[in-house]
Length: 410
Image (cartoon, rainbow, N blue to C red):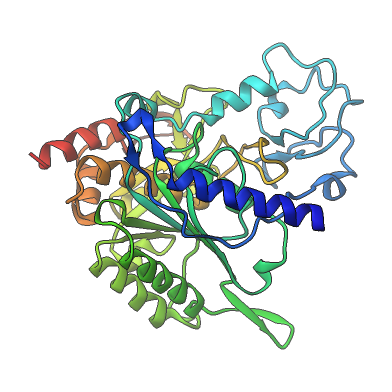
């Protein structure tokens, strides 16, 4: 424990020194200071959880979309005739593979392919549109704060209740890296502010959601934002969670979102249609397909059977969800491929795109951003998808969107 504490202290000092130094590559630009890194959670070890998996499980489309072999040892299994199943595996850097694999399936190459945010976001990065100077705040589970994907972006990390004592979570590492990761992220130079805390409490042995907690976390970010320089403000809060009228704290969290909106902060959550009247959905993708080609995309795995009826109801902005590689909590340089995603992966993606928009046009509002996302979004023809032909859109087009947003600033 003493060794771990010593390492933690050293890392915090290094983070502080780094954040307070000048960046010669940007003409001596003074980067914002680290405000607080409360703790460095331990990495998580999944080997015990998955130790019973010694061979590649069978995939049943009726039960599950993916095969989870994170941190598993299937090295003794014969998978040479399991190519289709391998395409739907969720695996990480700790997964031990058989010596012989189908020629078409290379785990390292699959990881690299799925690290790409897709939709030509890296074209924007090549032009210097990386979210620099924009703050993204995240409310989620415990974060592996020293992961290489985002440790240089992290300006603030605070924990509450039981989250002060537990190991890093898979969810935290994923959402942070999708938003600001150096290789995985949409806005790799954005500043990251992060709160890890519960969304409720146990009452009579049962967990009860209380969204007053989220309201308090939002207000905490508003408090922090008051002291940030004008050109380094938090502009968006990513919350991979939603709430309903029947749950405790509904009024409080809705009021907190309103306060954030009034301060110019866009709050993107699973309840975005409730808070702002905006609809979004997550994109599925054909395995190993090019994520920069919109024709690679299909409805997301968990809602594909409802897609036709769903898309009739409203205009949806859609962003990547399935087949993503993100930071893994199993090690500071570890990664994980998730064959199946959820809105949890889509929300930080949208937050990242909004940060890019704020960089090129600091005066952009979330209303303008959303309207432009729809007007510049792409629609593709899905032919004979689930035996139906239909128009599928709007798929967010970050390149067109940012160009339009830049022009509005002139």
